[in-house]
Amino acid sequence: MKIKKNLIAATAAVLAAGMALAGCGSSSNGGDVQKTADGKVKITMWHGFSEADGKTLESIVDDFNKSQDKYEIDAQLQPWSTIGETMVTKVTTGDGPDFVTTGADNGQGWSIDGTFQCVTDFYDDKDNGTDDYLENVVKQVTFNIDGSEEKCAVPMGYAPTSVWYNTDMWKAAGLTDADIPTTWDQMLEVAKKLTKSDGSQYGLAMADSGWAAFMKGNGSGLYTTDGKVSINSKENKAFLEKMRAFYKGGYALSGLDDTAARESFESGQSAMVIVGPWEDQAATDKGINHDTFAVPDGDGTYKYSDGKTGSNTGSTGLYWWVTSQVGDSEKLPGIYEFFKFYNNHDNQVKWSLGSAYPPNNSTVTEDELSERPLIAKISQYTDNSYIGIAGLKGGFGDISASLDTLTQNTVRTDDDIQGLLDQAETSIQGYLDEYADN
Image 1 (cartoon, helix red, strand yellow):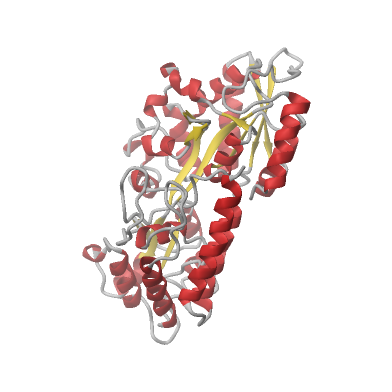
Image 2 (cartoon, one colour; image 1 turned 90 degrees about the horizontal axis):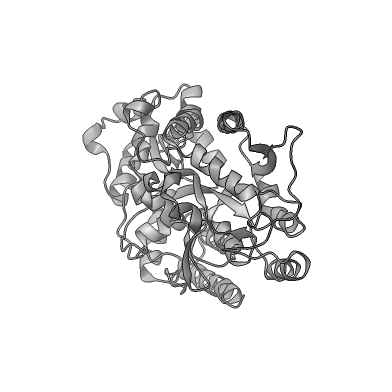
């Protein structure tokens, strides 16, 4: 899901000439406000949840609609690709959703170009319960917009990755709780112990794409927090050489995407996999006895905005975003009421148990999630989890593709790693320059 320069330009033109919409702090009246037959303000929501998480969300929406007589949320299931590819155009014509769930990577660019309007005023009203939000989750959507620090979205589903392991295989390899790795190198050594030389069992199922968090935790990242390219470094080269040797040693299968990596774990082919909390239910359904531990830190030099280094814990960071077609219309207070309702204590217990996402509300206790103890366990990893590609105006899809080319060629070929890094640097620098000019 990427924002191309011409799309941003077209969006800006339509916003300015056709609808007079603005980004953060919009004063637009939001156009015509539709009402239901019983007089409720109709508010359109887009989301992409189609399984148990979708049913849980729909139940919360139904509860909200029944809880008051002013607003009616129309929750519309859309493919994630539709949200990424058509939502911007529809918002510029006033035919898009009033609020939507999508990731923080796209969200920053869309907050800057005027597709989304920021919601700092929602956070300013402490009656909305925002003091109970997890601090690190909010930090991921706190952006500099026109020289002002703005909170541009509300937590929806923030899920740290973790390492899931087959407890039967773990025990058979002679491993105990004392062997839970605390460093990346220790994890690779554990994976070697879990690998069978006859090729019947691999230590780790790991996609050879989407390595942004791993490049930060073990190397110097793709670019710095102030947007300067940093991928072509001795630290990244050393990490990639280490991972190539790991794959060549037969401890992990190459050529896997996220789905194939999960299937390898769920079929008993691999003893460990790095993925989000939804693996708990999937492994249970496949009859895999399992547990989880935090993705261990590496020895990287990349420095996050909070000063931390070494974290390999990436996250799926989904948030609620208000589109600029809402402005300050009658819809806005209704959307804010829903945000308050969705993230309150009871609904976050319901959401977490039904979706496998950790709760956004810090008042939810471990005991309240006792039906899903591993989800409660993963909640402890949120403070050390970060969105892999963030902090830019745009180009997220392009930069991600450049990284995937680098890591896939590292794992799948014998191409010179330094040459691959040179190519990645040129590519990523080009995207940084392109979007810096917008």
